Length: 616
Image (cartoon, rainbow, N blue to C red; front, side):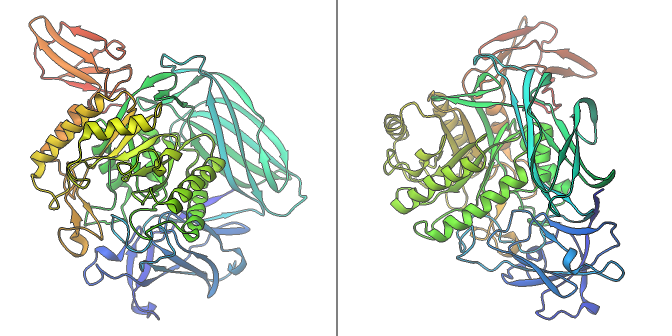
């Protein structure tokens, strides 16, 4: 059976040949770029860990991420080089150099030098270049065979588009790979249960599969009375796998998943059968100067809670995030686009080198994160020159390749060049046109109505998401008051464009970035958020909450009327409640455009709660 051990205590040195007897201790996750003296060190640093005893025939170490180029040694033997990607997880087998009787010394170097071979390329990215073991590291042991990969396919059966479907019939299967000696008879025992490993529910079905090393696939099953996943009803299931040989358990693993369906029909987006228009905000992780990109789970949850409390149900990440982020989004209900960090003006046009690196990162992030129901789309780049023929070629090829890797999700490219020629911009190759809209700031004083008219004319019948809009200081004046004005102005524009199926405001927080206009060292930043670096809300945070709320509150002499928005956002409100003191008043199901008069209330001194417990 698989045994997990978390490796949190390491020695750390910035010397080329470290004196480990005098090296200092650090606790993972760790980055040197928030520490005095090394805040702007872009180069190589070294880590060392004496591994604890770990039962098993084979041994592995899994890195949540190493920023960026990593070399891994065990007992002086080089076992792996992982390069060109700072944010994707990878696993190294330690067995060839493992000493079962003696001490096992694991060493890792991390190099965060700007590199033209990596993605992001050179210094063309708008977040901090924090180096180190920035995410958790785990040691694990197993028997002679391991479950190396598992991908779940979970499809709800939606009889017709039009109304939200919360549960019913669904199809299931799972496939993966067993690594080990060929031609050895094995038995794979599987079980699907409702809930998560921490809060298990009833067993849906269990079974056994005779197999051997190589690829495996569970039988396709059809189940009744399945609860579907929705951002307001994040129902989850767990697949447990155990691998046996002659009655002895060699390995085991679990994966959490959900049944949900997103479909596009022309310019309309449907979630579990219901046409929806969604809105949310992007959060830039790694921005608290006390943690940088080496954020503990408590910091991640703090910022994700702020995001959710802003009524965010749709977001994106410019670079790949840790499983802990997507676990939270799975459990609390946020839809996510995860992106390859191909960003900005380096190189001027995409080349074969970026195509190769992108393909590697796509494969790694899909392998790691494909079972998260919160992830609804993959992104292949952001703010390149998507009018250039070579870059358009890259986008088209990357979209096709990513769809082949995962045909169950949308694949998109986010553009800021569509205004030059809306008919030939690279975003047209994606499933949804994703457009960064900085008309009035970065994009100059264009006429918004005319630009949107041209985009719609040249791309008829296409769904659109404005994927960024906001105000960056000190590049542009006006402060947080102007930020709030821009947010409200843009939301009012977007509500009048039927093809817009969602909006993503930029951004939740002021953020640390190696290209920032304000501050230096670990404090170098862009002032772009509705909260500060530490997550303290500004005035505009409340404006975001109000504009993204699915309900409008209208007090009157007969009581308080609640109106379900039918513009942006637009989705069914179901299972919501009013909390006033120690009283709880259920709100009836309201479809977009419907209203309800609560005659029990005559003031607005109350809180509306989602089914997940977050305040509206």
